[in-house]
Length: 221
Image 1: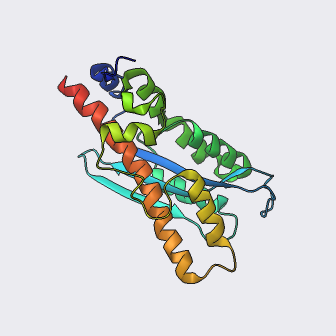
Image 2: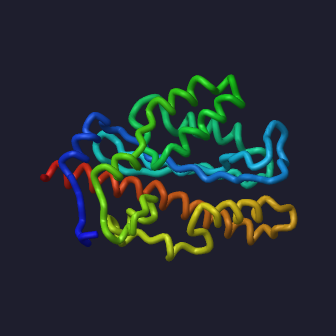
């Protein structure tokens, strides 16, 4: 109401301080089908088909890896195996909201043989959303707390509206459904693949920038 920025930088940094490097930043994309096409799935069940994972090493080096399955087969098991390999066994896994946590629990229930390493990832997840809610607010958010609303107030150089083709989760779901359709041309499928990879990458890069803002500004204060 006052039109001013609220940022308790020291408190945000203190909250994040116990979560030491190396650190991971994780985002999923899912598809929900009214009529299931894969065995063992039910109507409107969110099925993860893609993830992006940014990694910050102990020395501060940033890298990124991704998984995307456009084969048209159920991506769930390959997704789970790739996620386990990508996340390793130690270090906080930052997410934004509890969405990834819920999807991992569902995958663990579907694949008992992978449940232990999947649930071990869940134990490492640190949700940036409640930390942001408690310690940061910019009037430009207009009462919204999604990463796409917070990001422009912290890192205006990162923009979703300049992405080609896929700019939000709904568009990602539609693009995925088009990509796996048997009538989709190979050139179009390749274009969709690039668009999906760019979009999901931005989601985890956004979390890195939020984390950096909170930790670096907080330490300086």
